[in-house]
Length: 129
Image (tube, rainbow, N blue to C red; front, side, top):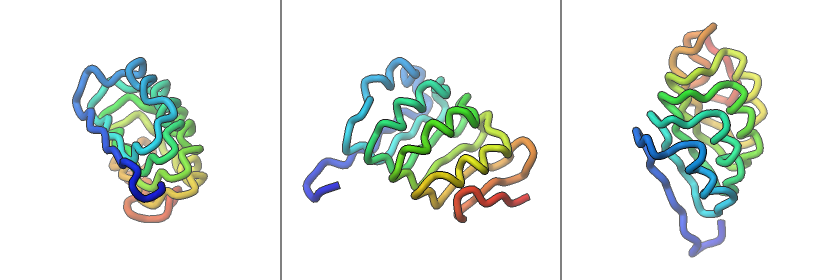
């Protein structure tokens, strides 16, 4: 992002108003580097919109209903380097999807069906049991 441009971090944590329909208003906006949607009713459908944010670097999705399918929608978020997936509906199969993220360095996944931990502060897609 060129110097002087605004960098925004959006915190919707635990907000019932941060729905898939509400996220449509963010479609394609530049300057948004972080979004916290932990504890919101966001689903895989909302992740399609987040994938259009060209400057997105980190995303908090803990305590949401997102799945492996939704995470795959984010692969085109070229700058995404950190993602929090604790207490979501992901499975161990998401590890292969995370390995395709070009800039991803940190994944917080906690307990995942089929594994104790996918990746914590390590290379994306690295599976650790």
